[in-house]
Amino acid sequence: MSQFWSDIVHHLTPYVPGEQPQISGLVKLNTNENPYPPSPRVLEALRAEVGEQLRLYPEPTGRALRTAVAKQMGLTAEQVFVGNSSDEVLAHVFMGLLNHGDKPLLFPDISYAFYPVYCGLYGIAHRTVPLDAQLALNVDDYRQPDAGAVIFPNPNAPTGRALPRAEIERLLKAQPGTLVVIDEAYVDFGAESAVPLINDHANLLVVQTLSKSRSLAGLRVGYAMGQAPLIEALTRVKDSFNSYPLDRLATAGAIAAMDDTPYFERTRRAVIDSRERLAESLRHLGFEVLPSQANFLFVRHPAQRGGDLAAALRERGILVRRFDQPARISDFLRISIGTDAQCDALVKALTELIGETRHAAV
Ligand SMILES: *Cc1c(COP(=O)(O)O)cnc(C)c1O
Image 1 (cartoon, rainbow, N blue to C red):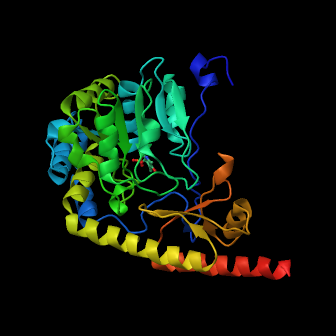
Image 2: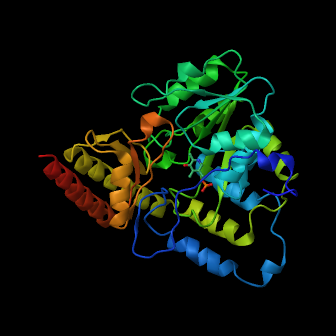
């Protein structure tokens, strides 16, 4: 605390990201990074961009990257906004599109923990909507006459459960006057994207990131897609904040990543296959495993406290994520999908841990 702080700083509750310990040899399954390296073409593009031109500011509208994203998504560049990570894009979305005075923004009670943080930062009225007993999201719960806007991830995080596109379309049609933002950070691991609905629905904005399915969490690139008036709102906020959010290296790497479809297909398929294998092994150990369309599993063991398991895994050099709040998910572990070798190390450790406590109980 300091006398020099602006008033608002005293009242902020910042987001707490998963641990990034600087220790080598850890099996790091706690922040949903991709276990595979970025495409070799990305590394080539980054090297090619290192040079004299770094003296110059980048092109301020990010047109080349917006065009590369548009090409993959069947959109026009005017329907794409790019930014320095999807977290920053989301911040602009909250500020520019989700603040509707007394009419609250709706999002799930169990969801991405950054949403309430942005609401605090920008003073946005909000109301959480409970997931059902299976931790599934039902779109009918979001048909509330006083809603200012709606945001949720699809697949949801940290549950991994996804809605089909038809359900999202049903919500868009039910309330054409309410903006719906779909955060598709994990969509490439098996869910249906809402992007094909953009041309028919003025009230849809879709946000994606290169951090997960394109193996580029370190490059910090994200984007939003929607009809041109929504994109214009984001551009107005961005140009009141930072004219050049994406540097030349990030832009070059991101374009190469968007263009390398074969590598993208191969690595996302590998993650999906490992997820199904790991889910099977965990069920075999007695875990309840929620159906996941993401690059992580959300699991709970009927006879084990989540906190105890996470701590015991950590002692064995394996990091997973656990959430204290809300209480009904405090025994769940969120496990990022690693390489098959990392998944095997996790299963081996859990087999020993669960065997030990079974033994101790008799
Ligand atoms: C990881 C994640 C993001 C943020 O991605 P960045 O582009 O790395 O900032 C956004 N939303 C959800 C739901 C995520 O899990």
